[in-house]
Image (cartoon, rainbow, N blue to C red; front, side):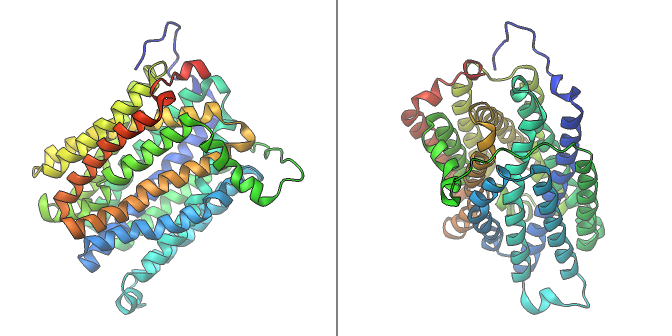
Length: 417
């Protein structure tokens, strides 16, 4: 976290009207997404009592998400990005409505079929989120001037994390006190607010598409761009493998119920803890962005994340576990801001959607497939041992990536501004 020789305005990007509306849209949408995630997780665990079933939730979302990602990136580089976001937000709304219908006792859907319909809705949501991510990232870059990319990435990350704190806490509280139907109704309310705010963001032109490009050429364009860039590839790989092995979020319902002995309310706060830490770090990064020593900061942050996860696995105290999850979020947000800023700075506008879609494949692999890996590892090794193993693997990933990516180690974001 470096001192600037020139005056740095931490709030410059917030003076851009459309960016403020965009942040508000992301805030409410993130609350809705995170609420639905924790509601689905707790509901599935209550029905199955099986940690592996929680891992399957991640797999059900990841597979269609990854399969759709390159097509989603191509769409974001070819069509109006705001319209893409609107249509796929509406698809997500349809999924939430379906989950709400499943909870009506007179229909008896889950009693007859088990949790399979929930997995099917999660899969549809995975497709929706595959299209939302590159369109959102690409639209954000159109809303602000280039010299504010670091500032916008920091605030975007911070607002996302505030929403990600609020969502699980609200979702867990509503579920715990008012039941599953009220919880899904609350998700729909937040989705409605987000869509209203999105409507007030001014349209930006669709990117210029080169004539004569084949679909296959366009789909592979983002992949080729990333794999030829050692810095982008290293940063994305570090995040993917670090979180793939080090993520413990999917197992939080089991930790909450069997080790920390708390209900859905306590689970909601545990789920929010990494986001709370990320918000604290986001406020620091807004004033002291990691520019000159970005590469070293990236490796230190991912290592710190892995250590926090190992200590969390050992803890049997609720408050200590909460604090360790907060620390993991603080470390994680450093890598998020560095990776997002790097991606914005080195990617041309006509390829932002496709490069973002490649990044979403890495993210989907680390988060959703990481959830499946966590469930499978817990089934084979036991809950605590599997999380310790994952944290140790994260540290190994840091060492290997540092060895293979010298350009990433010496990354200076100010030099590529």
